[in-house]
Image 1 (cartoon, helix red, strand yellow):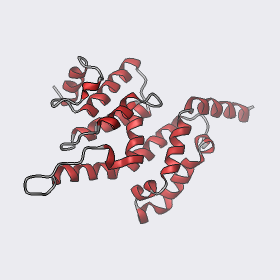
Image 2 (cartoon, helix red, strand yellow; image 1 turned 180 degrees about the horizontal axis):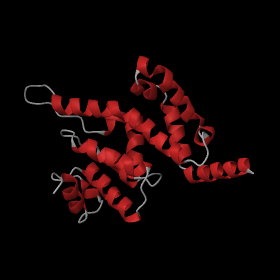
Image 3 (tube, one colour; image 1 turned 90 degrees about the vertical axis):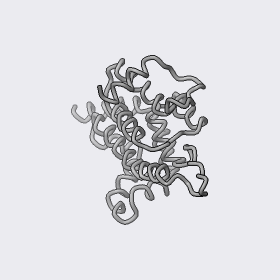
Image 4 (tube, rainbow, N blue to C red; image 1 turned 90 degrees about the horizontal axis):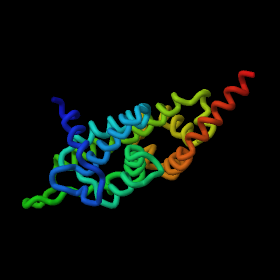
Length: 206
């Protein structure tokens, strides 16, 4: 039996509550696992499902990673987006600060493995963000309609195209956090954007 199946079966017997911070269950993975079950029950697969799977797989391999309780509440209880999208937002805007900092050892150093694991994960987050946006774009009924409705997306895509090799994706994203916030704010109205794109496509075909 695979680790994922075992995790899913375990999550079938639990639900999100303030007592998430237990010694036996990583509360963030628990939250994302419950989201996965909800997605399977609704049988709606797409960008959010792929994001959920990616985060579960990534976080399961990280050593000693724990999210702060206030950040966990924002990820799991904020109804603006699903937990996976909320997590993506928190990672992009707040980064390392949403996690519990590894404690110093008796020798005075920090847990190098935990720090290295977290750094490696954070380096991947900007590309995870761009891939998520690209997957949403692929669902729009009219080419470039999403960029037209959310110009900040085109801004990042252009910067990524020409500056990624020079600065790296992480620095590009971190230097423009207000634009990231604007993108997520506008994505709250994604259903309306999709309807508008469909209407524009229909009008152009007439």
